[in-house]
Length: 423
Ligand SMILES: O=C(O)C1=C[C@@H](OP(=O)(O)O)[C@@H](O)[C@H](O)C1
Ligand SMILES: C=C(OP(=O)(O)O)C(=O)O
Image 1 (cartoon, protein in one colour):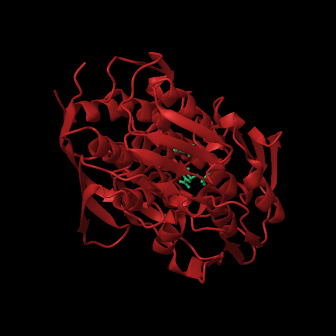
Image 2: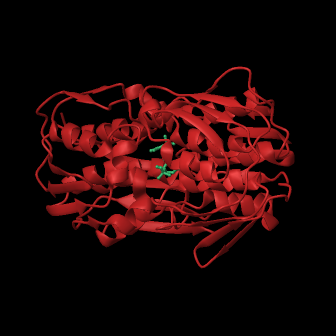
């Protein structure tokens, strides 16, 4: 097999985190919210379906949505369980919103989601007087609508999902809530709340304050391309010899752009062409293959690149020397245990990766060679896409088990990748 090169310009789909939040905020706002470049992936469609079940009228037209907001107290009890499928974001954000409603909800999820910890949202929501009954800290979960009160909460982990759950609960509470984070996590909920209801949120000295009782007003949300999806092309472009790829209108929120900083420190040939417009920052990114230096990613770096760790591990295998990732224990409670999955599956492709309790030590520089043609995504979209990019560098074909799980965040990943391949 000859190694292909990757050439061309690509638009990756809309941001997953922002797409979820556009549905949530649009649904509880007053008036008609419009969304462009919505991500039609399985996770975001799970959120969309859940709000429909709670009586929100949402019209789909390609990647555009029109949401008839019902206001903060206009949601209705769903007659069927809310199926969160594979989506941690849907589950945790909606747990926050539903804890303070005037009705009860029952949430279920797939096998992977049913193993992920929910105690991290149940604890603060219970402090607010929420009643959430999970199964040993996992889905299925009953959420009994209660009258909530505000709290001061210092997050024990840097998690945007937990922060957002508290923000959404706080909007229905009887008094103000303040939130402190150990490290800044993605701030899309804060940015969107500021857009829909500027009076509802203050942010000062790292402290977030939510003032309930202000209505949210319908808005237009333009969703940027997802940097976590662009990451696969950034890495492929950097390590597949002879490649040059431009990725258009990628969201470059500073709480999400850790991969850009890593590539810059590695000396990657990356051009950032910023787009001047209001809302979430965006840029066109051009990456060319070339020599790279090793990286060292630490705990403080993790939140801004948490979903990019699997593809960054593959990047490290292509670079001479030892790269390290530490402070990343959160990766063990994602759709799969991502540290274990990366070490075992890239190991099957000849990579030298040592697994640590909270990270990986990767010794790169020798070409990957297939030791075992059957690799497993463990049903985890980010692992599947990492293995797909790895396959471009291999001497033999591999089979990726459960590769269809890519549809969780990027349904057209394989076809988009194929459009760039030049043999
Ligand atoms: O809030 C969000 O949209 C997300 C937050 C992150 O999870 P954590 O909050 O668990 O770190 C991230 O891994 C996930 O893909 C999306
Ligand atoms: C962890 C992820 O998503 P979620 O937590 O929403 O399932 C992800 O997309 O990598």
